[in-house]
Amino acid sequence: MAGLTKNEVKLTMAKKTAPVEIALLIYPGSQLAAVHGLTDLFQIAERLFQRSKGIEHPVLRVSHVQFDAGSSSPPRADSAPDFVIVPPSLGGLPIGDAFAPIVQWLKDCHARGAVLASVCVGTFLLAQTGLLAKRAATTHWSQAQHLAERFPEIRVDADKLLIDDGDILTAGGLMAWPDLGLRIVDRLLGSAAIVETARFLLVDPPGREQRYYSAFSPKLNHGDKTILEVQHWLQQDSAHHPTIASMAQRAGLEERTFLRRFQKATGLRPTEYCQHLRVGKAREMLETSQQSFDQVAWKVGYEDVGSFRKVFIKLTGLSPGDYRRRFRVQSQGQGTSPTLQAEEV
Image (tube, rainbow, N blue to C red; front, side):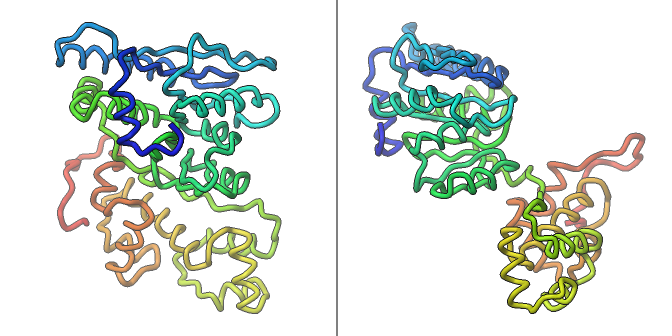
């Protein structure tokens, strides 16, 4: 199904009389919870769909495709799948020569018309096929920079929890497999099926973003000791209104040289880096305190609360109030009501 749009893929599936074959790949170190969870999700979706349509014939067939450690042969499969899902890995990144047979099998499946999908760092297996070149893809936010550096031809978007590119889907977080499974249910069985399945499982339909959950992890292993010293200085007190001039002075460099070296080392411009640090501190305060957002903004170094609100929404995807409602940590024995006050946000 290479090159097909999502609607064309759905139409192709709708014309099939045999059940749609969904293959879940099991490889050394793969997360079996995702494999078995997706198996259950598809079985529940099928049962609900059959009941709603008054049919008894199977519409989905889920299989587990095994690849054993040390094997030089392609994974074993009973038939050619319509969908192949690569689960997360709990045993390190699935890269290197040991996974070459899987990579080739994935390429062969795609060439025969299969839709490929991955969860979390399973995207690294898809990346090795070359099929993600010049495409947008996501992976776990903590590995996004590594994916971008190792496969620079991929447009890595770690803010997205799920990217559906027709014949290839990638999901970000370790627990993003329900989002992926529900998206596939939507494509195969329709929007009513995804809502009914999500309601039955008591999970949210796809629509979340990974940046709601991702913490800023500054790049510190770049090898530039001068820039690293500035990073440590900023981390100690990011609310001291650092300017480009003060950072360059701290580094003992001319401003133009400092800007070039800082962005090369960290992947961010100094102003962007400081924004990430301040938003990180603000997130912590919103999670653990009852301070208003005005107070939080002031404490992290912003006098213009409106400006910081825009920065916060840009980097987290949520308003301060929505963020606090999602992630507020209630203290044990806290006597106050968990209900938020409007003026806090």
